[in-house]
Picture (cartoon, rainbow, N blue to C red):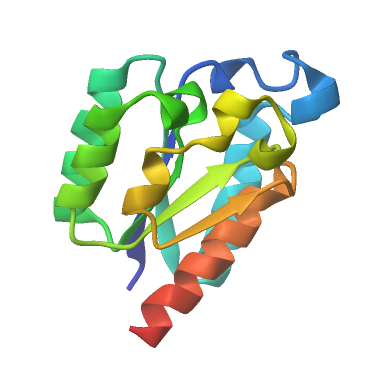
Length: 147
């Protein structure tokens, strides 16, 4: 039986592949989703892959995931540094959360070094490009095996 995993993407990630390719690479979000689904099947996950530019919708998905999923991988993008609402929703769910960033946020502007999401996260993956999605799926599998 496949375990449900939510992969939630925040604002502007729908522009991947065309936006600041020197930072975020050339893969678009659809390509990342397809590769993530392939990796997920290896770990017996069914992925619900989502993206929104709207903070409230992301909060709704987190609440939904807390009832339906075994874990959440979240690339909250710009909301990482601003959203107490997303942090509170993640803190309220009782499942593992992996915070994901394509770039290394600690090598960028100072404001990007603060993450509200980290307070609610089991772990953080950043700086591995779009390969971070695959690493996060593997990490979630290990988290769920251990406990």
